[in-house]
Amino acid sequence: MTPKPMPPLRLILAAALVLAPLLPALWWLWRQGAIGPAVAVLGGLAGIGGVALMLQLYFRDLRTVAAHAAQLAAGPTEPVPPLPVTASGPVRAAAAAAVRLHRVMNARTELALAQLEANESIIEALHDPLVLVGAERQVARANQAARALFGDRILDRDLAASLRNPAVLEAVDAVLKGGASRILEFSLPVPVERMFEVRVKPFQRRVPRPAPGENEVPAGSVPGRMVILTLHDITALRRSEQMRADFIANASHELRTPLSSLLGFIETLRGPAREDLEAHERFLSIMQDQASRMARLVNDLLSLSRIELDEHMPPAGKVDVLDRLDGVMAALELKAASRRIRLTLEAPDGLPAVIGDEDQLTQVFQNLVSNAIKYTRENTDVTVAVSLADGMAVGVSGPAGRAGRGMPMVAVAVRDQGEGIARTHLPRLTERFYRVDAARSRAMGGTGLGLAIVKHIVNRHRGRLTIESAVGVGSTFTVYLPAASEESGEGRAAEPVRRQA
Image (spheres, rainbow, N blue to C red):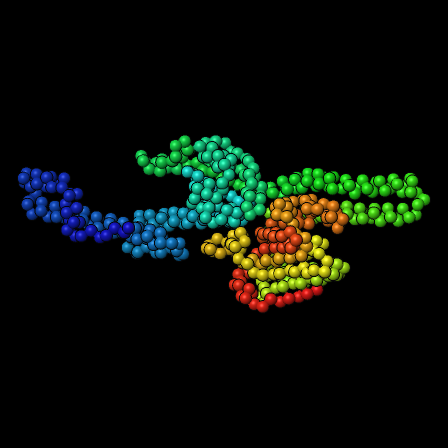
């Protein structure tokens, strides 16, 4: 704030107060006759006037320096605002010192802001989620990866509202109370199970000593103590380990029978049936079937392993469902014709694309339609019906902020007219190697992995698979996939397009 000019009366009174100790001396000299009364009065007035003038000049210099500093404080100015020509030498020296100080502080401020901006950019660009937790377990900071994992509402709330893992919360509380760093693993079950390695490290910030009753920290906590959580996704590593174990167990179990058959037939051909050409033809045909079964089994196991490895990473491409279904039905047309089965595709106009991986969705449709052709009765229909659905209605939640409605979904339903499946079997149909009729499935060339592959692909696409069946009537397998854009439901009211193969 710039000092205001002092009023003349107050200036004179201030000067009089400054000269007050000299007035008794003038009075004593007048009493002694050393000076006359006129000289004493004039001397006093002259002293008061001189001091008043000095005070006026002093306050003028103060105002000049204050005004100059105010100009500098208003922002970086180049060139520096000039001083009035009336400014004295000391004032100019003080102003020059203020300019130098201003420039130094500006340079330091710019450097600090640049470092702060760089740190902010680095933290936001980190691939791993990072969360800063303060006193009372409140989330003070979360980078972009953390907000994508837990949602934007994680900020300024208790960590337990977003991360409900007792082991992690216990570790955070212990570190807030002065404990050492900790490393542990935990899993997030939805939307697809993911494994994380979390590092809980203390961060001590400087805090002023609180006044009595102010800025009190919780009992047992350390003032200024914060916790840094860094989460590293180890899903791929753990799934790779699990897949190796599962592959050995499943492959050894499923390959044992065809391998035993092959070894038995080879031993027979090299022994008793060495010269029997009829037995050669029959046994070689069986051996080819068993070898083909093993090849299909190995291919399905490898495909399932690759799908599970990437299940936690949702695809980002766009797929035309009708185009993929047309290709699948064309490829299976001869297989259906061999059993006198009619393939029909029903779809509305204006159907949106879906978010997905083209090859994997082709595999889903091919598995479902192929299964329908295998298990439906001869001379019947297999119908593929495509429609639009609301994600909330099928149990798939939409993006945050869309009250009462889920994300738009594209539903692909494959209906057959087979013998149907009893309700007791439905919950286990997507398990590996689970078969309702194992002998019939093997006879038809099935590996018991088709629906397991479908389930994991649908999980990766953040969709849903439902199965409905009635014994003696048939089964319907429906896949729900998220639409690629915000489409309204006009397609549901349109006349369906029927395509028949």
